[in-house]
Picture 1: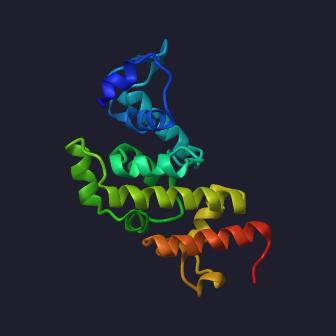
Picture 2: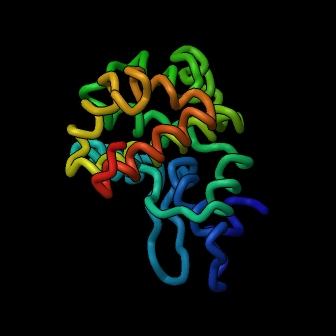
Length: 188
């Protein structure tokens, strides 16, 4: 399935196609027509990502189904999406975010230069970081409060920083469970 066919096809789209197109718009060099609507190319998509970052939001769509997330992971996230997510963090330093995403700065630069996508492991960890940050934002009220919480040792995590636990799926589940408990006011 090519990007051009997905962007030009006037037929109704499945969720997978819509999510794929949303994350690959940064790869399209020109404005394309989809169902009579103009879709932004690279420059316009980067402006949208920058606007989302200024507002302290994740560039990854909220509320993805498990199948949609799986499809994003297997196809690989766009490097522009990863860079936009990284830029959305103002409290956490760049190296901490890169470690949570499972990618080095140099690898990210090479992938951007070669116009490649992230590998499945880095895509998975990037999605995990975005999902946990959004859940923390919902529980704590703001993106900045979520970032501060991610960077601080948590009693419910044996005094470990939540951001450090996002490197494994088991650690991520512990962090999500704690956030759910915090959201419901159950700390014990």
